[in-house]
Length: 384
Image (cartoon, rainbow, N blue to C red; front, side):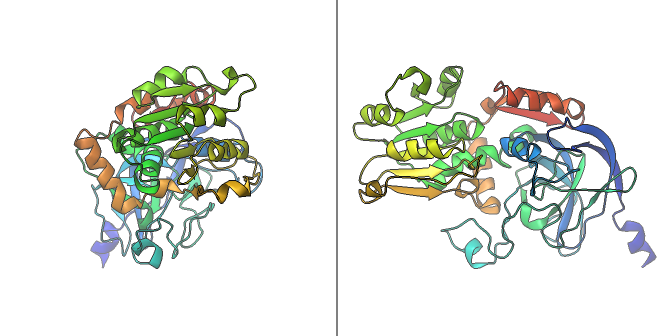
């Protein structure tokens, strides 16, 4: 018994980037990370990256915006210790944490039609998914809130087993990190959700990291025409690296609606349209740009103002459809290892997503780069 107590994981003191108030720069602080409880693992984060969702909640004044908080949900790490009933993992495992869980047992997890676990439903909580409590405290012992069940802007974090995926240890850490959220979301939306066919036409509204990942997924699926729509002219050349064949800047169209341009370019409308920004007006534009008879519009962006989606009901009768997407339809434990293999087989190109790299102490620089539209993905290393 005494031996077991000696071997039991102990609290760890480490560094984390803590946000104390809405929109404030993150501060590097010493924190305490509790040992993992049942169905949990503690992960040593090797690297993480900044996603637009982090920025959205960093700016959010009302619940579920809550402070002080440790943000970050796209990361790669190594299991440091495991709690009870976490037998699928062991210390030393190479893993990525994911904001979306997979219990692998509920009716939704067992079905190929859904990636939304119904036993442990997705929610933006300030604590752990099972008990709602935090595993973080600051140097004064005051609690720090979690973010999306991951909180990767810390040298160590505790994550529920449903939100952890083993990856091939030969995967470079910075590239495995991308599969934790953004790259998987976009590639998955084209590959898993839309099921883009060879020779089809695709229109992507918003060429941020997720939109570019959609382009990459469409390229892998063999789409012949990939149209990128963005008001940032710099995205024209960038998009070409990801398979974008045509570029539209709505600011350069005058009075002509972007949907009309796409319908003309595709001889009737794109087979697949993806909205990757989070604006109801663009969701409507994407729908209007899709082909009658079989056009699919896939919504990937979270509407940033909470506005309702309004589309012409008559056009729905013409055979168009709208599909919502969480994590691009990807089942984390099943599909992330497949995407890792696609990278290792040189089918999926991930290196081009990384435009900047910084150390944890310079994490606010990553925010600046994203807010200025200068980065696709900025990797944040814990040991630099």
